[in-house]
Image (cartoon, rainbow, N blue to C red; front, side):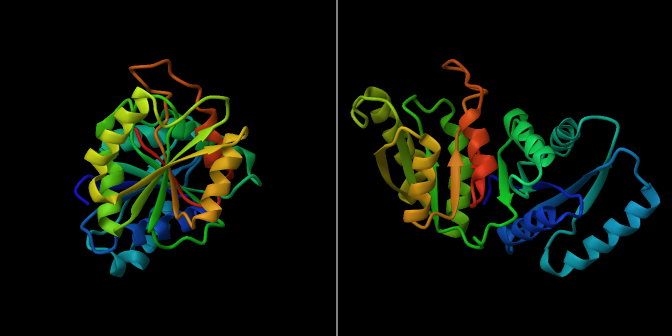
Length: 259
């Protein structure tokens, strides 16, 4: 998986953070990929945190080819600290956990991070039972793919897990999908970048886009949802990221946002 060499995992010792770390380690497998942990605290006891994190790194040492490292962050908004750490460490991917709708503060931070991060973010629901990645649903709208090179991250994941990509477009307004110039361009882009890992492109009518996505995920045994957010788009009007937020907050499978 040559597109990912460093992963940043926000870690606060919660169950959701541990789930994300376990997923990250399984995600890495035998690859020589570095994991950096970032702990954010308003008033940290640095000596105590050092001992705690060193013990954590020792616990996972046998499962990794490259020892984990950790960083303590404070004095600022949690999401800003995580993004700054990602940029400083040049992490290619952020893997973070979420406990679901029971923790509104955590959900808000997750949504902000996904919206503002300039690298791919993989959000792992605490209640997710998915351990393998065999089927990925890439959610696309009617617009032309803005940054085709971003699909290289998805290709890297497919190569690692031998996973198939099932592209999904939800039609929530009257009209015809699948025959526009943008659809044709996207089809060529998908075949070029995803190679033989691209399976098919399905168009579904549903006035509720999120419901349509989750219904498809359940019916087709999807292990991961991938989305190309348009909040940083250059060739079209940026969106406010509502769909991305809904997926991240409500999905019961991992959600990958690709920038």
